[in-house]
Image 1 (cartoon, one colour):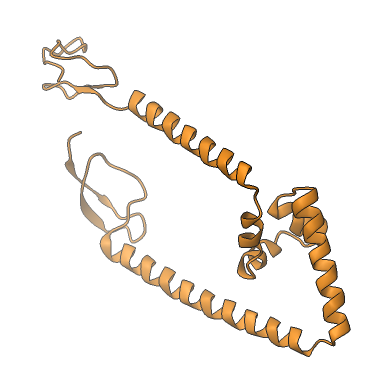
Image 2: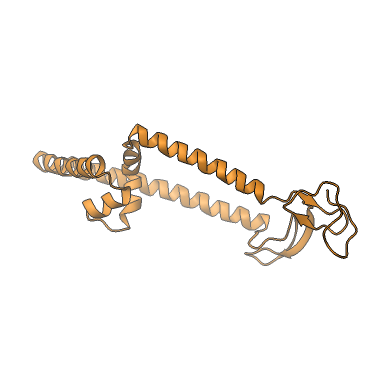
Length: 182
């Protein structure tokens, strides 16, 4: 595929920029906008980590001040619900949060932060993990085959016509072209 120089605006700041790309694309940002976005994402990630640490500290302090009998009851209820939903009913992460514990969609992130998603994923039986790995392997192989099927395999040396079929050293199929496919 030929690489060309295309001049069109950054999708954020709208300043004209010369792009050296295979083909014009929408949504490309200039280097200064890209750096600005990355800086914002890094700052957001750092703030999020601080918030998570603060939340974990608050929850641990809350737990430490509970009376022992309340801790035992809470522990029993949570573990009982997890055993029922994880091991017996084999529910999904979302089903456990919403059906078993009665939480709304906002609890999804909370479950990740406290480590429940990691625990949930670790409980998957070995045979299911093997099946999932095999299914993923098959999907990757199918994706590779599909990508190969829909890849440009030959290009005309005169008009630039591209084909997904292989035309080794044949005349270009375009009516007004006398170029050769390579």
